[in-house]
Image (cartoon, rainbow, N blue to C red; front, side, top):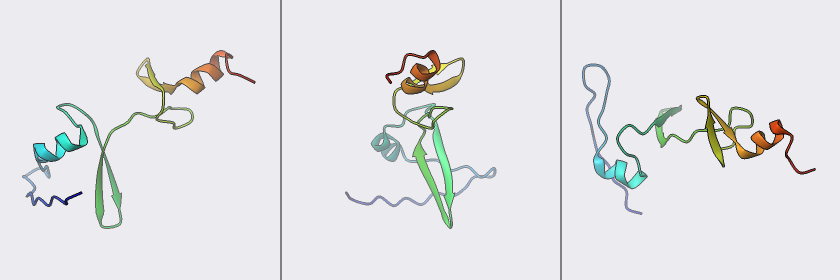
Length: 83
């Protein structure tokens, strides 16, 4: 994969714009969320993926009353899990 290096300057309130080419390659569209993490001297951006409020899983997520819960935890709570 070819590296893409772009230099952007911060505006007066600390914002930058990301090139559409990069956003498209990540599958990010208007109003999608981005996670921002700091690791030492690096700022890491990644596409936001909701996780289960109980177990932290990102698989099989359902939104219920503005909270994200995975299928396994829903089954566990409802008592419908396999034993």
